[in-house]
Amino acid sequence: MGLREAVLQGLPPDGGLYLPERIPVLPDSFWQKFPDLAFADLAYEMAAAWISPEEMPADTLRALVADAINFDAPVVPVEENTAAVELFHGNTLAFKDFGARFMARLMRYFVAQSERPLRILVATSGDTGSAVAHGFLDVAGISVTVLYPAGKVSDVQERQFTTLGRNITALAIDGTFDDCQRLVKQAFLDETLTRQMWLSSANSINIARLLPQMFYYARAIQQQMQRGISPEKTAFVVPSGNFGNLTAGILARRMGLPFGQMIAATNANDIVPKYLLSGDFSPKPSVATLSNAMDVGNPSNFARLFALFGESVAEMRAEISAYSLSDDETRRTAAELFAQTGYATCPHTAVGFAAAHADAQLHPDRQYLVLATAHPAKFDSLTGEPHALPQRLAHVLTAEKLSIPMQNDYAALKQWLQT
Ligand SMILES: *Cc1c(COP(=O)(O)O)cnc(C)c1O
Image: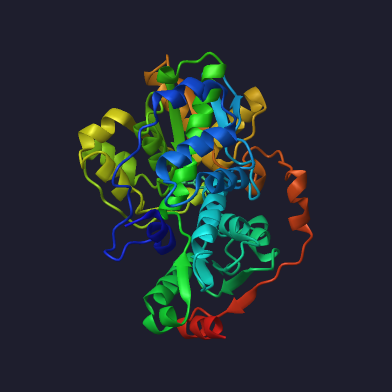
């Protein structure tokens, strides 16, 4: 099994998840130049440890990485012992831009070796659709169909994937997010359809999305060192839903990146915090919260974490702590943080800061790097203060929304795909 297959297929036929057979460890020569590497060079060195020249020539990989990772992940000090790692400087204002842009370019490279066009089907409750649509915009040989629940995503989210046009089409399904997911699954399982066209998914469990998420952990530690803060004292706090982001951090550590504890911050969907307490993994239906991109009742990357820790809860506890925060705590944290420091957070990032504050009670000597997973302007303000959308995104507020309304019915989807 090579990278090409794993990336294009997304999901293995046995119902599991792809994980690399072997995690490459970065050599001493990398760490010697690490403190001064530009982000693009740092990202290239890490990617090259995973992708052999047989899979992609080195100069092609270097250009691909530079094109995908065209925005930074700055560390912004917020409090005495906390700083935000801002992952929202890409096109759609959320960290998913890193994974989606990289995956799109990797797929384009692999697809170019084939004659057939590739169709990506993606179901979204909001963020994934916009990141994937922007990631694949104008990527030759690939078209994207986004299925979303009509009337159930925020206006800004909807605009981000319905105003693009070109190789991106949006279907407004008269149903819920779960219906959209079911329709997509049904299409993948439909052998008549998959004989007629080359279909792939771009969901968060594609291994190609984890790779670029390792880069910004290293970029953040590099900035800690430049601030004179030791990596070992630094704990990462990761607002988590499907646990892809956190899994990427663990993979970065296995590549040799030094840092202290990994802290998972969840909302009321507390499957992983409960697992770390009890050793019992019990998925349950998700509950709706303010941090809706983290409303996941059965985190799919848990299977990867479980394997990475040798299926041992004790081993996982040694590296990962977890906190579950309520909507009240989230709102209070965002309001206090804004009042005391002027730093505005999205609801997901606020969950992260609340977890950092809880952990600091037990570990006053830690320095926290909270991953700021989305720009505050993407969501309703938690502080009463409106947060302005960055200028470069203002155009989505005026562009025309184009989507095709569709019944919640597989036959309708299939017919549309076939014509
Ligand atoms: C997707 C998302 C998360 C959760 O990330 P996972 O990798 O699924 O744990 C957190 N915050 C925001 C803003 C997101 O879009």
